Image 1 (cartoon, chains in turn cyan, orange):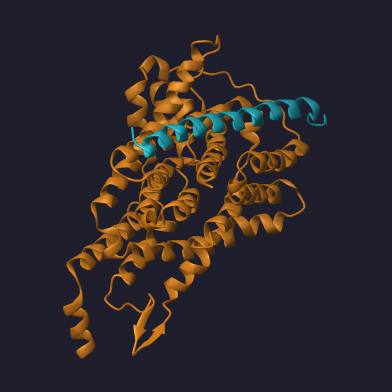
Image 2: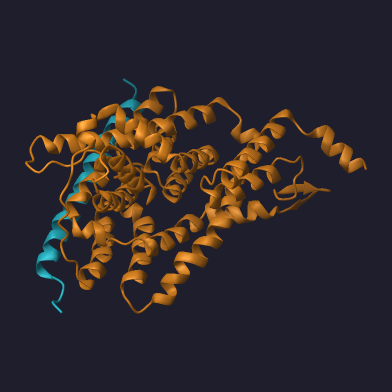
Length: 42
Length: 373
């Protein structure tokens, strides 16, 4: 397997893994913010 | 008369072909309404740069160098990444993260639907492109013009013209590409799944903190992507802070409009026959389509995977809305849902996933750049 192909698979792992990780962290923090900072009741 | 004759005689078949391509781009923009803000200026720009000794490009005349206006703009606005980044401020000001924050779970679809980017990187390497070129081709799957331009300009500027054409053309073709791809991997019964909408209330404070938090997180994870994420989120802060409405309006309208005009015209520098007409371009156009299809399939299959573990099923088409083409993708999903079941309303979920796709695609672009930095 060529070094470019190895890097392409590394990119797949890093890219999808990284994207899921970042968006999961944003998800958790969003849930937390929604809980801690609810809208004021009128 | 001599000049006229010289120009006519020195024009090459390639240049004529590029002028025809420029005309087709303008036709698609004007007549078919496919991304006209980019395709019309880009089409005319393509015609301008393909005249022999065109004055819009830098030429040596009588032994002295005369700077061409498009070359000057290219150096100032694209080599420096300025135009795509300024457009990002406007896009940020246009995005309402409300539907996403009401259902933050939709964020995960914004990641799943980036699958096409990385799938195409592998395919492009198999086809003989080097890894940086392959990554630039893959980023077409971000379904986001400015991100594609930003990334490919850094990794493979020689492919910038073809990548920009593919990115914007396929974004305009989302209503054709996505239904085809979704039907490949879903059954009618799955497309009819109804989802109960339970929106969480979102305070103004959360809407202001959200873009700041995303910027900080991106700064730690993919600092190379900070120009993209930072400018996008800056635009969003203008929108949400409540005290900069004038600036937000300007970013959404004048700023985006001016930069789109300049970006479209300037990208045409890469549409010269000598740079564009080759088999690589055809491959890039084909791989771009694969990227969009695989993005859609990745999002749908992720939703189907989640359904294996959930009691409240997700309509798998929502996963397809996780691409960045906003708001077109969410509209397509709602249209498909209504076509299968007139009483099925999934629009708000689809909008949430679609907005998540905007974050996901920028992060994906940043991760690509980080990989090579």
